[in-house]
Amino acid sequence: MEPERIDLSPLALPAARRTALAAAVLARAQVGRAAPRGPLAVLAGWARPTLAAAAAVAGVSLAALAWSGTRAATEESTQTLAEALIPERASPWVSEGATPSGEDLLAGWEASP
Amino acid sequence: MSDDVAGLVRLALAGDGAATERLVTLHMGAAYAVALGVTRNPHDAEDVAQDAMVQALERLPECRDPRRFPGWLLRIVRNRALNHRRYLGLRAAAPLDVVEVRAGDDDPSEDAETAELRDRLSAAVGRLPDTQRDVLLLHDLEGWKHREIGSALGMPDGTVRYHLFNARRAVRADLETLVREED
Image 1 (spheres, rainbow over the protein chains, first blue to last red):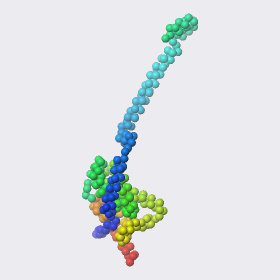
Image 2: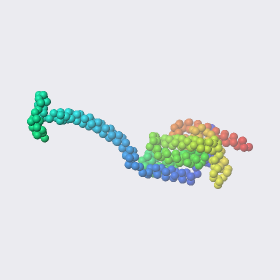
Image 3: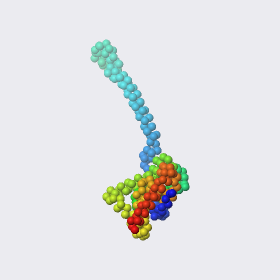
């Protein structure tokens, strides 16, 4: 047989206190919800996965750009360097091993842009 | 407690103020009862219940199964109450029995006999194991049904009855011992 119910009413929260307590909880919860959040916090909360995906795409794109840029620059700079070191008019002297005369140098200098 | 708790939780999550209010009102007494069982002091129990309820509302999206909201809430209450008790113990460096004496001391208008009865009851209930105490308070104080308690605490109805049986018997024996000692 189940023991009789125990009167625990002396332990009960009085109705007025219960109402006041519930009101206090709701007010505190409301304040917490209404608290202004900074734009960064809003962005972080709203778009964290999107931002992460965008950052990953941007990272891969930048790496690809840098790699292709380096390659192109290397090819280009080799050509430019050769042209800079051996001007077009001096190419025959270099390939033939001939020493240019003063007139040749003067003519070459005057013809250079 | 006949409301559809899961429905209220879902509405509260969607920002329905009335549902949130109903949810709080429905569970305030239970939160207080469990807090009182641990702190054994009405004022501390109010503070703990209030803090725990606010925390529960803030963390409501974390309540994975809205049907289990009561049990989830009562776990938050119990943890906060235990932390509070530890804090009091550390602060005062006093044993719990000393803290218990504070119950009912600070309301001069309160009838001395009522205060004494409440302290005795509170102490007897406080000596129960956690589960028995929660079952007893929710059933005999808050009027929850066996099924509702079972759902909240995650146990079958039969186990709720078993705990209730043992809790009532233990509290009754505790109070009778006190009366005999006085005689």
